[in-house]
Image 1: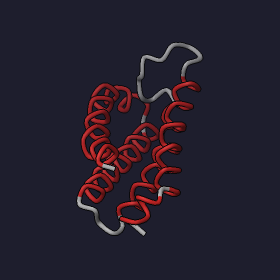
Image 2 (image 1 turned 120 degrees about the vertical axis):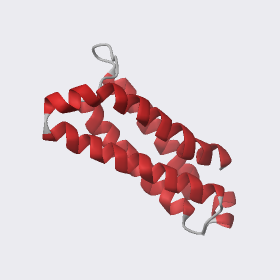
Image 3 (image 1 turned 180 degrees about the horizontal axis):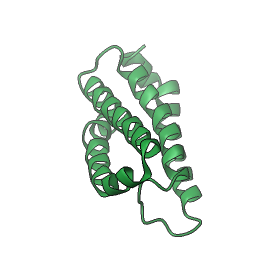
Image 4 (image 1 turned 30 degrees about the horizontal axis):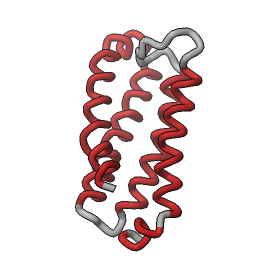
Length: 124
């Protein structure tokens, strides 16, 4: 669980900050749709920090927060990869594979949080 807590509290916000810095010029050019997607990404990154800190502190609501983040991350990643607003340097045809990787990663953690006896012992 500490691995997931570290990913959520450290890696997700850093990765988002780097990606948002690169995407900011595009956001201005694309208008309100890109701004709305940027706000959604900020919310997801913020929830990642909250869930990561809750997992680290073994808070009673940590498992549900992490599961909420995993679900929102898949949804926002689908929107991000389906639009041209955030640069990613993806080669043609690679965006579906990138989404599949995100969905598999988040799905594996979601299943682990849902069925693990160890996790349920800490967070009912």
